[in-house]
Image 1: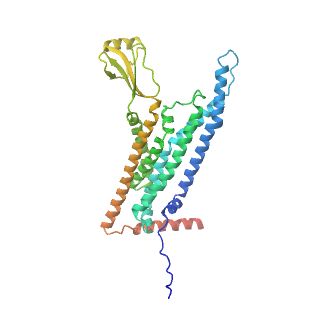
Image 2 (image 1 turned 30 degrees about the horizontal axis):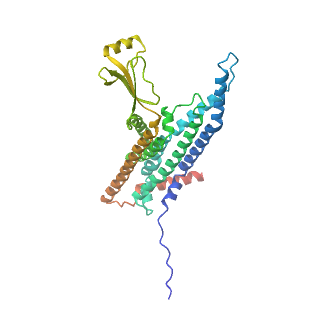
Image 3 (image 1 turned 60 degrees about the vertical axis):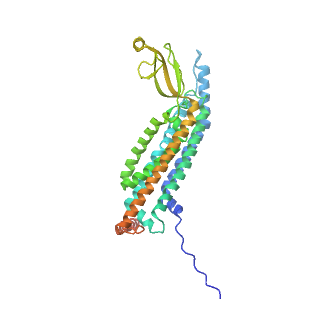
Length: 359
């Protein structure tokens, strides 16, 4: 006798598909941003860089002669403007990721009770939150890495060809050309999620996430030069030391050979400085800096610190959710059961939306 086939047990909901459906507007917005910025960077790398390079060649070959100076100034200005706008937009991604994570990913769901409602669908709070963090992190990390790579290609296309092209140690160019921006975007995403969990209000989380990322960026900017040993350039009293790169510290050299950091009179450019340095007993000057050879060590060291910070923030977020859900269970409330107030709020909002559509 053949046993009757049993219906398969209802499987758990596909969390990733559900997350993409709930946050579909943010996904579309992120896709539009990545595609538009990538197109702008490709335009910058190709036609704009070529036109600006040709204009500078015209300027360098004709404008020093006593003949009329004719060159395409608009091409140079157009390249400069597009480079500035694309760079600033790329560097704004950590702020956008933090603001979205704080306002929509965690803050709004706690404010409306959607998170508790989702826990009734067979998904534990920790599993749901892990998916909520992993899926956006993968999309933000991949998209930001692609844009950073394209920005570096666009910058390299003008190197040595466009006279006004930014140097590698320009602060905005330095961050936009390397993986530090990817680390900042991931850290900003987790930082915004943590702020949203702590505040539990979408608007407050939105307002607090942006200053938090700004503080993180300032800390990275101040710490980064000290993550790798510096190179030192020295000179005598007749001239200041020559260097090319990121300056960390400068000062004077005493008669004993000691380096004394100072920000005043690091050269004998004026008679006042000459008198002051004579009084100090100065024999020369020095400058600590990072040359081009230190670019990737600095980038990788700072990125490693940011990834470690991202992992720490993720652990804090998961621990906070575990503590809250455990506390709810101890107080007699089922972890997977939404409160009546939360469900009633959601029901009222749905009724209002349906009524407004009918009207």
